[in-house]
Image (cartoon, rainbow, N blue to C red; front, top):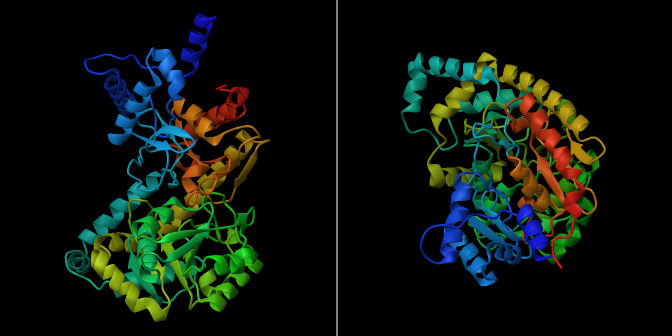
Length: 474
Protein backbone atom coordinates (compact mmCIF):
# COMPACT_ATOMS: atom_id res chain seq x y z
CA UNK A 1 0.00 0.00 0.00
CA UNK A 2 2.87 2.37 0.79
CA UNK A 3 4.21 1.95 -2.75
CA UNK A 4 0.79 2.83 -4.16
CA UNK A 5 0.66 5.97 -2.01
CA UNK A 6 4.11 7.00 -3.19
CA UNK A 7 2.99 6.58 -6.79
CA UNK A 8 -0.12 8.72 -6.25
CA UNK A 9 1.81 11.51 -4.54
CA UNK A 10 4.61 11.71 -7.10
CA UNK A 11 2.23 11.59 -10.06
CA UNK A 12 0.13 14.55 -8.95
CA UNK A 13 2.63 17.16 -7.70
CA UNK A 14 5.88 18.76 -8.82
CA UNK A 15 8.77 16.79 -7.29
CA UNK A 16 12.30 18.06 -8.02
CA UNK A 17 15.52 16.09 -8.01
CA UNK A 18 17.72 17.40 -5.23
CA UNK A 19 21.44 17.64 -5.90
CA UNK A 20 24.48 19.58 -4.77
CA UNK A 21 26.03 20.17 -1.39
CA UNK A 22 24.66 21.74 1.74
CA UNK A 23 21.47 21.30 3.74
CA UNK A 24 18.52 19.68 2.02
CA UNK A 25 16.38 22.78 2.46
CA UNK A 26 18.90 24.85 0.52
CA UNK A 27 19.02 22.21 -2.22
CA UNK A 28 15.23 22.38 -2.52
CA UNK A 29 15.20 26.20 -2.53
CA UNK A 30 17.80 26.16 -5.31
CA UNK A 31 15.71 23.64 -7.26
CA UNK A 32 12.68 25.91 -6.96
CA UNK A 33 14.67 28.85 -8.29
CA UNK A 34 15.97 26.82 -11.24
CA UNK A 35 12.48 25.54 -12.08
CA UNK A 36 11.15 29.09 -12.10
CA UNK A 37 14.03 30.33 -14.25
CA UNK A 38 13.47 27.53 -16.78
CA UNK A 39 9.68 28.18 -16.70
CA UNK A 40 9.04 24.65 -15.49
CA UNK A 41 7.17 26.46 -12.73
CA UNK A 42 5.33 29.34 -14.34
CA UNK A 43 4.12 32.59 -12.72
CA UNK A 44 1.20 31.97 -10.41
CA UNK A 45 1.93 28.25 -10.02
CA UNK A 46 1.14 26.90 -6.57
CA UNK A 47 3.96 24.93 -4.95
CA UNK A 48 3.02 21.49 -3.62
CA UNK A 49 1.53 21.23 -0.12
CA UNK A 50 4.40 20.90 2.31
CA UNK A 51 3.40 17.57 3.84
CA UNK A 52 2.95 15.91 0.44
CA UNK A 53 6.25 17.17 -0.91
CA UNK A 54 8.03 16.10 2.30
CA UNK A 55 6.62 12.59 1.82
CA UNK A 56 7.66 12.50 -1.83
CA UNK A 57 11.23 13.65 -1.07
CA UNK A 58 11.67 11.65 2.12
CA UNK A 59 12.39 14.72 4.27
CA UNK A 60 10.67 16.38 7.20
CA UNK A 61 7.94 18.98 6.86
CA UNK A 62 10.28 21.38 8.65
CA UNK A 63 12.77 21.02 5.79
CA UNK A 64 10.08 22.00 3.27
CA UNK A 65 9.02 24.95 5.42
CA UNK A 66 12.60 26.25 5.58
CA UNK A 67 13.04 25.74 1.81
CA UNK A 68 9.86 27.63 0.99
CA UNK A 69 10.90 30.38 3.39
CA UNK A 70 14.29 30.66 1.69
CA UNK A 71 12.64 30.79 -1.75
CA UNK A 72 10.37 33.57 -0.51
CA UNK A 73 13.35 35.48 0.93
CA UNK A 74 14.96 35.30 -2.52
CA UNK A 75 11.82 36.85 -4.02
CA UNK A 76 10.92 33.80 -6.11
CA UNK A 77 7.66 32.87 -4.39
CA UNK A 78 5.07 34.36 -2.05
CA UNK A 79 3.09 32.75 0.75
CA UNK A 80 -0.62 33.54 0.88
CA UNK A 81 -2.39 32.97 4.17
CA UNK A 82 -4.80 30.07 3.94
CA UNK A 83 -3.99 29.44 0.29
CA UNK A 84 -0.43 28.15 -0.08
CA UNK A 85 2.85 29.28 -1.62
CA UNK A 86 2.89 30.55 -5.21
CA UNK A 87 5.47 31.49 -7.81
CA UNK A 88 5.60 35.27 -8.00
CA UNK A 89 4.20 37.03 -11.05
CA UNK A 90 0.81 35.35 -11.15
CA UNK A 91 -0.75 38.30 -9.31
CA UNK A 92 -0.61 41.84 -10.57
CA UNK A 93 -0.43 43.52 -7.18
CA UNK A 94 1.21 45.14 -5.44
CA UNK A 95 4.14 45.97 -7.65
CA UNK A 96 3.83 44.53 -11.16
CA UNK A 97 7.47 43.51 -10.72
CA UNK A 98 7.27 40.42 -12.90
CA UNK A 99 5.03 41.57 -15.74
CA UNK A 100 6.07 40.11 -19.08
CA UNK A 101 4.66 41.42 -22.33
CA UNK A 102 6.12 38.89 -24.73
CA UNK A 103 3.68 37.17 -27.06
CA UNK A 104 4.47 33.45 -26.80
CA UNK A 105 8.11 33.73 -27.85
CA UNK A 106 9.03 31.46 -24.94
CA UNK A 107 6.37 28.85 -25.61
CA UNK A 108 3.80 30.41 -23.30
CA UNK A 109 0.44 31.82 -24.32
CA UNK A 110 0.05 34.76 -21.96
CA UNK A 111 -3.58 35.79 -21.61
CA UNK A 112 -3.03 37.67 -18.35
CA UNK A 113 -2.41 41.18 -19.70
CA UNK A 114 -5.03 43.45 -21.26
CA UNK A 115 -3.02 44.59 -24.26
CA UNK A 116 -4.01 45.43 -27.85
CA UNK A 117 -3.82 42.60 -30.39
CA UNK A 118 -0.77 42.66 -32.62
CA UNK A 119 -1.14 44.59 -35.89
CA UNK A 120 1.50 45.40 -38.50
CA UNK A 121 -0.33 48.70 -39.11
CA UNK A 122 0.95 49.88 -35.73
CA UNK A 123 4.54 49.32 -36.79
CA UNK A 124 3.99 51.25 -40.01
CA UNK A 125 2.20 54.06 -38.17
CA UNK A 126 5.07 54.45 -35.73
CA UNK A 127 7.62 54.64 -38.55
CA UNK A 128 5.57 57.31 -40.33
CA UNK A 129 5.16 59.34 -37.13
CA UNK A 130 8.87 59.26 -36.35
CA UNK A 131 9.72 60.25 -39.92
CA UNK A 132 7.27 63.15 -39.69
CA UNK A 133 8.83 64.40 -36.46
CA UNK A 134 12.33 64.08 -37.92
CA UNK A 135 11.29 66.29 -40.84
CA UNK A 136 9.67 68.91 -38.58
CA UNK A 137 12.18 71.31 -36.96
CA UNK A 138 9.56 72.64 -34.54
CA UNK A 139 8.65 69.15 -33.30
CA UNK A 140 12.33 68.31 -32.85
CA UNK A 141 12.88 71.50 -30.86
CA UNK A 142 9.90 70.70 -28.64
CA UNK A 143 11.21 67.19 -28.03
CA UNK A 144 14.54 68.50 -26.74
CA UNK A 145 13.35 71.31 -24.47
CA UNK A 146 11.44 71.72 -21.23
CA UNK A 147 7.70 72.20 -21.73
CA UNK A 148 4.72 73.23 -19.53
CA UNK A 149 3.72 70.57 -17.00
CA UNK A 150 0.26 70.30 -18.53
CA UNK A 151 1.64 69.62 -22.00
CA UNK A 152 2.02 71.78 -25.09
CA UNK A 153 -1.07 73.61 -26.32
CA UNK A 154 -0.71 71.84 -29.65
CA UNK A 155 -0.82 68.41 -28.00
CA UNK A 156 -3.79 69.30 -25.78
CA UNK A 157 -5.66 70.63 -28.82
CA UNK A 158 -5.05 67.41 -30.75
CA UNK A 159 -6.20 65.29 -27.82
CA UNK A 160 -9.29 67.46 -27.31
CA UNK A 161 -10.31 67.21 -30.96
CA UNK A 162 -9.82 63.45 -31.09
CA UNK A 163 -11.59 62.74 -27.79
CA UNK A 164 -14.54 64.86 -28.96
CA UNK A 165 -14.67 62.93 -32.23
CA UNK A 166 -14.70 59.71 -30.20
CA UNK A 167 -17.76 60.87 -28.25
CA UNK A 168 -15.88 62.32 -25.27
CA UNK A 169 -16.45 66.08 -25.63
CA UNK A 170 -13.79 68.14 -23.86
CA UNK A 171 -12.10 71.53 -24.23
CA UNK A 172 -8.32 71.69 -24.55
CA UNK A 173 -8.16 73.95 -21.48
CA UNK A 174 -9.65 71.14 -19.37
CA UNK A 175 -6.89 68.68 -20.28
CA UNK A 176 -3.54 67.87 -18.71
CA UNK A 177 -1.32 65.53 -20.71
CA UNK A 178 0.04 62.62 -18.68
CA UNK A 179 1.97 59.40 -19.24
CA UNK A 180 -0.93 57.00 -19.51
CA UNK A 181 -3.55 55.52 -17.24
CA UNK A 182 -1.33 54.39 -14.34
CA UNK A 183 0.38 57.76 -14.24
CA UNK A 184 -3.03 59.43 -14.28
CA UNK A 185 -4.24 57.33 -11.35
CA UNK A 186 -1.13 58.20 -9.36
CA UNK A 187 -1.47 61.92 -10.09
CA UNK A 188 -5.18 61.92 -9.24
CA UNK A 189 -4.83 60.04 -5.95
CA UNK A 190 -1.86 62.02 -4.68
CA UNK A 191 -3.80 65.22 -5.48
CA UNK A 192 -7.18 64.26 -4.06
CA UNK A 193 -6.35 62.18 -0.98
CA UNK A 194 -3.39 62.34 1.38
CA UNK A 195 -1.72 59.52 3.33
CA UNK A 196 -4.11 57.81 5.70
CA UNK A 197 -7.18 59.04 3.81
CA UNK A 198 -9.71 56.64 2.32
CA UNK A 199 -10.18 55.77 -1.35
CA UNK A 200 -13.16 53.65 -2.36
CA UNK A 201 -13.34 51.11 -5.17
CA UNK A 202 -15.36 48.05 -6.05
CA UNK A 203 -14.45 44.87 -4.20
CA UNK A 204 -12.89 43.62 -7.41
CA UNK A 205 -10.97 46.37 -9.18
CA UNK A 206 -7.95 47.24 -11.30
CA UNK A 207 -4.81 46.06 -9.44
CA UNK A 208 -2.99 49.24 -10.44
CA UNK A 209 -5.38 51.25 -8.27
CA UNK A 210 -4.69 48.93 -5.33
CA UNK A 211 -0.95 49.31 -5.85
CA UNK A 212 -1.00 53.12 -6.11
CA UNK A 213 -3.19 53.55 -3.02
CA UNK A 214 -0.85 51.29 -1.07
CA UNK A 215 2.23 53.23 -2.14
CA UNK A 216 0.59 56.52 -1.17
CA UNK A 217 -0.39 55.18 2.24
CA UNK A 218 -4.11 55.48 1.56
CA UNK A 219 -6.75 53.15 2.97
CA UNK A 220 -9.00 51.31 0.53
CA UNK A 221 -12.73 50.90 1.11
CA UNK A 222 -14.37 47.98 -0.69
CA UNK A 223 -17.70 48.77 -2.36
CA UNK A 224 -20.42 46.32 -3.30
CA UNK A 225 -21.06 45.57 -6.96
CA UNK A 226 -23.12 43.14 -8.97
CA UNK A 227 -23.50 41.96 -12.56
CA UNK A 228 -24.51 45.49 -13.57
CA UNK A 229 -21.56 47.20 -11.91
CA UNK A 230 -21.19 49.38 -8.82
CA UNK A 231 -24.12 49.06 -6.39
CA UNK A 232 -24.74 52.79 -6.19
CA UNK A 233 -27.68 52.38 -3.79
CA UNK A 234 -25.27 51.16 -1.08
CA UNK A 235 -22.83 54.11 -1.31
CA UNK A 236 -24.46 56.39 1.26
CA UNK A 237 -24.49 53.70 3.94
CA UNK A 238 -20.90 52.72 3.15
CA UNK A 239 -19.81 56.36 3.31
CA UNK A 240 -21.53 56.70 6.70
CA UNK A 241 -19.53 53.70 7.97
CA UNK A 242 -16.18 54.64 6.43
CA UNK A 243 -16.12 58.16 4.96
CA UNK A 244 -13.97 58.28 1.84
CA UNK A 245 -12.58 61.20 -0.15
CA UNK A 246 -12.26 59.56 -3.57
CA UNK A 247 -14.27 56.98 -5.48
CA UNK A 248 -12.50 55.15 -8.32
CA UNK A 249 -14.79 53.63 -10.93
CA UNK A 250 -14.76 52.16 -14.43
CA UNK A 251 -18.34 52.71 -15.62
CA UNK A 252 -17.90 51.52 -19.21
CA UNK A 253 -15.96 48.27 -18.87
CA UNK A 254 -15.25 47.22 -15.30
CA UNK A 255 -11.97 45.45 -14.77
CA UNK A 256 -12.15 42.49 -14.33
CA UNK A 257 -15.89 41.71 -14.52
CA UNK A 258 -16.71 43.66 -17.77
CA UNK A 259 -19.83 45.19 -16.12
CA UNK A 260 -21.26 48.46 -17.45
CA UNK A 261 -23.18 51.03 -15.39
CA UNK A 262 -26.60 51.93 -16.76
CA UNK A 263 -27.76 55.54 -17.02
CA UNK A 264 -29.80 55.43 -13.81
CA UNK A 265 -26.83 54.31 -11.76
CA UNK A 266 -24.61 56.93 -13.36
CA UNK A 267 -27.04 59.69 -12.46
CA UNK A 268 -27.34 58.39 -8.90
CA UNK A 269 -23.55 58.18 -8.59
CA UNK A 270 -23.15 61.78 -9.76
CA UNK A 271 -25.78 62.91 -7.26
CA UNK A 272 -24.05 61.02 -4.44
CA UNK A 273 -20.68 62.61 -5.27
CA UNK A 274 -22.19 66.07 -5.17
CA UNK A 275 -24.15 65.50 -1.97
CA UNK A 276 -21.21 63.97 -0.07
CA UNK A 277 -18.48 66.08 -1.76
CA UNK A 278 -16.65 62.97 -2.91
CA UNK A 279 -14.22 63.12 -5.83
CA UNK A 280 -14.74 60.67 -8.69
CA UNK A 281 -11.80 59.25 -10.63
CA UNK A 282 -13.41 57.92 -13.81
CA UNK A 283 -11.15 55.44 -15.60
CA UNK A 284 -11.97 55.42 -19.31
CA UNK A 285 -8.73 53.81 -20.48
CA UNK A 286 -10.54 50.70 -21.77
CA UNK A 287 -11.98 52.35 -24.87
CA UNK A 288 -15.10 50.72 -26.36
CA UNK A 289 -17.16 51.44 -29.49
CA UNK A 290 -19.60 54.34 -29.09
CA UNK A 291 -22.61 52.00 -29.05
CA UNK A 292 -21.17 50.25 -25.99
CA UNK A 293 -20.67 53.42 -23.96
CA UNK A 294 -22.97 55.53 -21.79
CA UNK A 295 -22.85 59.13 -20.60
CA UNK A 296 -19.44 59.89 -19.07
CA UNK A 297 -19.60 60.75 -15.40
CA UNK A 298 -17.61 63.90 -16.05
CA UNK A 299 -20.58 65.15 -18.08
CA UNK A 300 -22.96 64.46 -15.18
CA UNK A 301 -20.79 65.85 -12.36
CA UNK A 302 -18.06 67.86 -14.11
CA UNK A 303 -16.97 69.72 -10.98
CA UNK A 304 -16.39 66.44 -9.03
CA UNK A 305 -14.87 64.18 -11.70
CA UNK A 306 -11.38 63.55 -13.01
CA UNK A 307 -11.54 61.58 -16.26
CA UNK A 308 -8.64 59.41 -17.42
CA UNK A 309 -8.07 58.82 -21.14
CA UNK A 310 -5.12 56.93 -22.63
CA UNK A 311 -3.90 55.61 -25.96
CA UNK A 312 -2.50 52.41 -24.42
CA UNK A 313 -5.58 50.35 -25.30
CA UNK A 314 -6.06 51.99 -28.72
CA UNK A 315 -2.64 52.60 -30.23
CA UNK A 316 0.04 50.95 -28.11
CA UNK A 317 0.89 50.23 -24.51
CA UNK A 318 4.42 51.40 -25.22
CA UNK A 319 3.23 54.90 -26.07
CA UNK A 320 2.93 56.13 -22.51
CA UNK A 321 0.64 59.04 -23.20
CA UNK A 322 -2.83 60.07 -22.19
CA UNK A 323 -4.91 62.98 -21.02
CA UNK A 324 -6.68 63.84 -17.78
CA UNK A 325 -9.86 65.89 -17.93
CA UNK A 326 -9.59 67.91 -14.71
CA UNK A 327 -12.13 70.22 -13.00
CA UNK A 328 -11.03 73.85 -12.91
CA UNK A 329 -10.98 73.97 -9.10
CA UNK A 330 -8.11 71.49 -8.85
CA UNK A 331 -6.28 72.05 -12.13
CA UNK A 332 -3.41 73.93 -10.51
CA UNK A 333 -2.97 71.21 -7.90
CA UNK A 334 -2.89 68.51 -10.55
CA UNK A 335 -0.38 70.51 -12.58
CA UNK A 336 1.80 70.84 -9.49
CA UNK A 337 1.63 67.06 -8.98
CA UNK A 338 2.78 66.47 -12.57
CA UNK A 339 5.65 68.89 -12.05
CA UNK A 340 6.71 67.20 -8.81
CA UNK A 341 6.50 63.69 -10.23
CA UNK A 342 8.04 64.09 -13.68
CA UNK A 343 8.25 67.85 -14.38
CA UNK A 344 6.28 67.41 -17.62
CA UNK A 345 4.87 64.76 -19.95
CA UNK A 346 7.50 63.64 -22.50
CA UNK A 347 6.90 65.88 -25.54
CA UNK A 348 8.40 63.37 -27.98
CA UNK A 349 5.82 60.71 -27.08
CA UNK A 350 2.98 63.23 -27.27
CA UNK A 351 4.27 64.32 -30.70
CA UNK A 352 4.21 60.71 -31.92
CA UNK A 353 0.61 60.35 -30.74
CA UNK A 354 -0.26 63.69 -32.36
CA UNK A 355 1.11 62.52 -35.72
CA UNK A 356 -0.87 59.28 -35.49
CA UNK A 357 -4.08 61.19 -34.82
CA UNK A 358 -3.53 63.96 -37.40
CA UNK A 359 -2.58 61.50 -40.15
CA UNK A 360 -5.62 59.29 -39.64
CA UNK A 361 -3.43 56.33 -38.64
CA UNK A 362 -4.96 56.31 -35.16
CA UNK A 363 -8.51 55.92 -36.51
CA UNK A 364 -7.41 53.20 -38.93
CA UNK A 365 -5.75 51.23 -36.14
CA UNK A 366 -8.79 51.71 -33.92
CA UNK A 367 -11.20 50.41 -36.60
CA UNK A 368 -9.02 47.39 -37.38
CA UNK A 369 -8.69 46.65 -33.67
CA UNK A 370 -12.45 46.64 -33.09
CA UNK A 371 -12.85 44.19 -35.98
CA UNK A 372 -10.16 41.91 -34.59
CA UNK A 373 -11.55 42.07 -31.06
CA UNK A 374 -15.03 41.20 -32.34
CA UNK A 375 -13.64 38.10 -34.04
CA UNK A 376 -11.75 37.06 -30.93
CA UNK A 377 -14.76 37.66 -28.70
CA UNK A 378 -16.84 35.40 -30.94
CA UNK A 379 -14.14 32.72 -30.74
CA UNK A 380 -14.11 32.98 -26.95
CA UNK A 381 -17.89 32.74 -26.67
CA UNK A 382 -17.98 29.68 -28.90
CA UNK A 383 -15.07 27.90 -27.22
CA UNK A 384 -16.43 28.46 -23.70
CA UNK A 385 -20.14 28.07 -24.41
CA UNK A 386 -22.07 26.53 -21.57
CA UNK A 387 -20.02 28.28 -18.91
CA UNK A 388 -20.83 31.48 -17.01
CA UNK A 389 -18.86 33.82 -19.29
CA UNK A 390 -19.08 37.61 -19.58
CA UNK A 391 -17.47 39.78 -22.23
CA UNK A 392 -18.21 42.97 -24.14
CA UNK A 393 -17.94 44.10 -27.76
CA UNK A 394 -14.65 45.92 -28.14
CA UNK A 395 -13.33 44.64 -24.81
CA UNK A 396 -10.00 42.94 -24.27
CA UNK A 397 -10.98 40.19 -21.86
CA UNK A 398 -13.62 37.78 -20.63
CA UNK A 399 -14.65 37.03 -17.06
CA UNK A 400 -15.29 33.33 -16.41
CA UNK A 401 -17.14 32.29 -13.26
CA UNK A 402 -16.03 28.72 -12.56
CA UNK A 403 -18.48 25.84 -12.11
CA UNK A 404 -19.44 24.88 -8.53
CA UNK A 405 -16.63 23.03 -6.78
CA UNK A 406 -13.85 24.54 -8.87
CA UNK A 407 -11.06 26.61 -7.30
CA UNK A 408 -9.54 29.48 -9.29
CA UNK A 409 -6.04 28.95 -7.85
CA UNK A 410 -6.10 25.31 -8.97
CA UNK A 411 -7.34 26.24 -12.45
CA UNK A 412 -4.55 28.81 -12.83
CA UNK A 413 -2.03 26.25 -11.63
CA UNK A 414 -3.23 23.61 -14.10
CA UNK A 415 -3.20 26.10 -16.97
CA UNK A 416 0.31 27.22 -16.03
CA UNK A 417 1.39 23.60 -16.32
CA UNK A 418 0.14 23.79 -19.92
CA UNK A 419 2.04 27.08 -20.42
CA UNK A 420 -1.07 29.25 -20.45
CA UNK A 421 -1.26 32.26 -18.15
CA UNK A 422 -4.52 33.81 -16.92
CA UNK A 423 -5.51 35.79 -13.82
CA UNK A 424 -7.37 34.42 -10.82
CA UNK A 425 -9.89 36.75 -9.19
CA UNK A 426 -7.63 37.15 -6.15
CA UNK A 427 -5.35 39.51 -8.11
CA UNK A 428 -8.21 42.05 -8.25
CA UNK A 429 -9.42 41.90 -4.64
CA UNK A 430 -9.42 45.00 -2.47
CA UNK A 431 -7.78 44.36 0.89
CA UNK A 432 -8.68 41.05 2.50
CA UNK A 433 -11.93 40.67 0.57
CA UNK A 434 -12.80 37.08 -0.29
CA UNK A 435 -12.14 36.23 -3.91
CA UNK A 436 -14.83 34.61 -6.07
CA UNK A 437 -13.89 31.48 -7.94
CA UNK A 438 -13.37 33.13 -11.32
CA UNK A 439 -10.60 33.89 -13.82
CA UNK A 440 -9.96 36.70 -16.29
CA UNK A 441 -8.97 35.69 -19.83
CA UNK A 442 -7.39 38.42 -21.98
CA UNK A 443 -8.19 37.12 -25.45
CA UNK A 444 -6.70 40.29 -26.94
CA UNK A 445 -3.18 39.35 -25.85
CA UNK A 446 -2.69 36.17 -27.90
CA UNK A 447 -0.20 36.48 -30.75
CA UNK A 448 -2.83 35.54 -33.31
CA UNK A 449 -6.15 33.72 -33.64
CA UNK A 450 -4.50 30.32 -33.97
CA UNK A 451 -2.73 30.75 -30.61
CA UNK A 452 -5.98 31.96 -29.06
CA UNK A 453 -7.92 28.95 -30.39
CA UNK A 454 -5.28 26.62 -28.93
CA UNK A 455 -5.42 28.34 -25.55
CA UNK A 456 -9.22 28.42 -25.40
CA UNK A 457 -9.47 24.71 -26.17
CA UNK A 458 -7.08 23.93 -23.34
CA UNK A 459 -8.85 26.32 -20.97
CA UNK A 460 -12.12 24.56 -21.67
CA UNK A 461 -10.49 21.19 -21.04
CA UNK A 462 -9.07 22.29 -17.71
CA UNK A 463 -12.22 24.04 -16.47
CA UNK A 464 -14.39 21.08 -17.44
CA UNK A 465 -12.02 18.54 -15.87
CA UNK A 466 -13.52 16.70 -12.89
CA UNK A 467 -9.97 16.17 -11.60
CA UNK A 468 -10.03 19.73 -10.27
CA UNK A 469 -12.71 18.78 -7.78
CA UNK A 470 -10.79 15.83 -6.32
CA UNK A 471 -9.82 15.82 -2.62
CA UNK A 472 -6.17 16.43 -1.86
CA UNK A 473 -5.84 15.96 1.90
CA UNK A 474 -7.32 14.15 4.86
